[in-house]
Image 1 (cartoon, protein in one colour):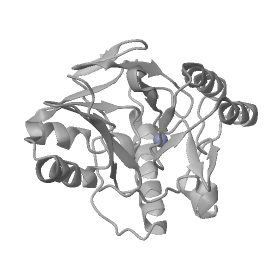
Image 2 (cartoon, rainbow, N blue to C red):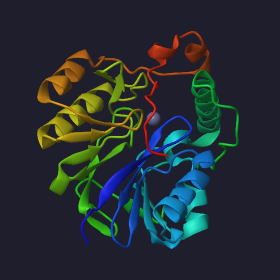
Image 3 (cartoon, rainbow, N blue to C red):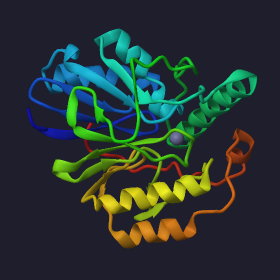
Length: 260
Ligand SMILES: [Zn+2]
């Protein structure tokens, strides 16, 4: 069963991609909690498929616009949640819970700048995956997708490489604003981030699936510029910092995509 298409579903503040096969579906990140209904409606109304065809939801990292819908999607469809194998939760302990609240608040802030209203985006900060994967594994049920560990934005970011079509989903590794590729503001591990860029560059992808944007072509020079500009020190992002930044600086801006 070969890949039919990859559709972009416009979420609360991000684009979530659905890989469509004749009798199964793969979601590249879980979106925000509030996106679940839209994703399920797309499956039933546009694709005319039962939601049980959603077999796997990949979670590339724990931010609200990537992990937020995963648990609810599993509850509604019976899909498996697949994420990176790590030694400890991203939002661990009291500090982790505070960071989770901060990230939810940042999501609301970005949404409000996009003219969206406040809605329920709460999700459990501790993900309960069905399967944990490591670099080089195939995506469960979707052997044509390879898991790449591309940390840097957080300590556990995954990218997903579809070699047959030369397409790669890189989550928040790379953003695009005003026709220019840029790094996310949050870079937790700068040296890992640089290595992750080199790793994806070496794949020579034809198309990059941007979580904050749409499908785009990217060339070696684009990667080189990002690698060159990667800071040497970590960059963190609190809501207080976010409130002092202009919207383009937030680097979460996204173009509207034409698909639902
Ligand atoms: Zn992120």
